[in-house]
Every structure is written in C-alpha cells, then in structure tokens.
Length: 316
Image (cartoon, rainbow, N blue to C red; front, side, top):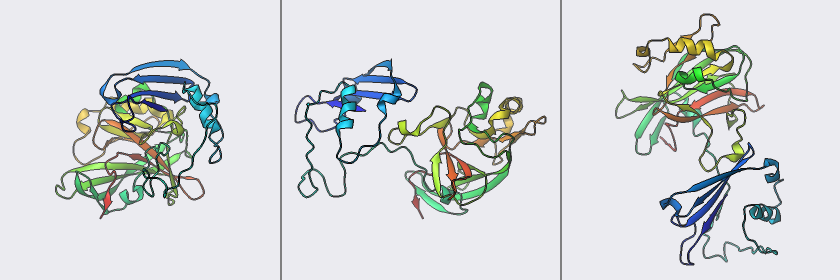
C-alpha cells in the first residue's frame, strides 16, 4: 500500500518527486513501513513491526461497498472522514478518464508468455532491442525424481540446501526438454529460453507460478514473481530428497565441463541414480520463475523454468 504527499495542487498525481509512505505487509506476520521523503530522488527509512496477518484479510466486498477498504486505510494511519461518500462518474461525464482506461488496477504479478510457442520447433519471435530469434527445441535426457519433490536451483549452491516446490509429482523418470532462442543475425549466438520437465505430456490448459513453503502469490506486486536465484550462470531441476549426494558429485566435477559448447552436462550420483542437468541460465545470473502447467483436469502436465529471454515478443 502506498500513500503520496503533495506540496501543492499543481503537482501531478503519483509525482515521482512527491514524498511517499509505503506499507509492505508479509504473510509471515511482519509489516515494514517505509518513509520516502524525496520520492524517487531521495533516501528512505524503514521500520518493522509484528502484526497478525489474519486481521488484514477479508472477503472480497461487493462492488460499491467500500467501508471494509476504508477500515484498512485507517489501520495505516490514514485520516478519513467519518462519513465516506462514493461519487460515481461515467466515462462520458469525465474529462480525465479516456474510454477503456481505468484509474487503478490491482497489482499484476508476472505471467508466463508464449510458453507453448517457445517449445514449438522453428517458431520465430521478434524481441525488442534484441532482434529476431527462432526456437530450437532439444530433448536433453531423463530426469530421475525418486520422491517427486521437485526443486529448481543453481547447482553450485545445492550444498547450502534448497526447498522444493509445494506442488509435487509422482516419483519417476521424466524427460527434460530445453528451448534455445537462436538469433537470426548471428546463428552461433543462442540462449536457453526455458527448460521443461515433461510430466504427462498432456496439453496445458493453465499456468501457475511454482511456490515454495511460505510463499503466497497474493503478496506479489506489479510484474513480480518468486524465483530461484542463479549466481553461477547455471540452473537445474533436482529432486529435493537426494540433493546432498547429487550436489557432492557436481562439486567434484571438473569446471571445464560447464558452460563450454552446446552440450548440457548430466551429473549422476552412482549410489542413488539421481541426477541433474546443468543448463545455462538465460542471460546469466539473476532470478528466474518456474511455471507449473496444468491440464484441463488440473493435473501437472509439466514444469518450466523460464529464463526470461523471450519476453513481450512479437510472433512472426
């Protein structure tokens, strides 16, 4: 939640130089309050306090019933009149609101883009400021998941532990497919656009963000996502039940096997048969979301680690 402070009536709404106060409410029972006296151009000071998250949840009110929302504003130290009046203005009556536009919308977290097309051999896209790419789809091998508790991670950091996603799959062996974005003006230049664990192969009817324990997608802001961190330029899928032995095999491997040439190396623990494939992570270090593809019956059809290479493309 944000509040702006304007020094005069001539200041534009949401002026980036206006003083702001911002509340970040987290599901773990903690709230941060940030004071930003200079807007985007100044520093900030934050204070934290414990809260009861249940007090900040309510049923969605019917349209036009704003009192429950006003009560939450009062919790944030807003000064509101005792009697609130809602004035409805039609598009025809308003000089400020062009047809088809809305003055506000709820935060829209990141959504997957053209994942089906990314995994279609030969499809072409134009990426802003990057040029034209064509998709090269390649089956890499078989991923062994003895417990079905899937995690996505930087393999170089597995020794420090990683939590699996809350959504599990049946234990078994699953195909791993990667989609390369090959640049038309430089065919030798290609990047991993996404890596997919094929669970059933059924058509995907809906995508959802893969979450770890304690994560709640309702807390995400505009364009945000929960992702797995990459610090070595490499990502992987791995079964959380066998992270320790697989991580040991990976750490003992010659670094020359990583990142050289088109091959994606496989690392297998001989004792458990568990493995991982170390694939290049898009543009390198960063944070990347994993999407769960569900079929029309709600079953898990696949998991996709999105390297955020093909973003806002123009299909060709």
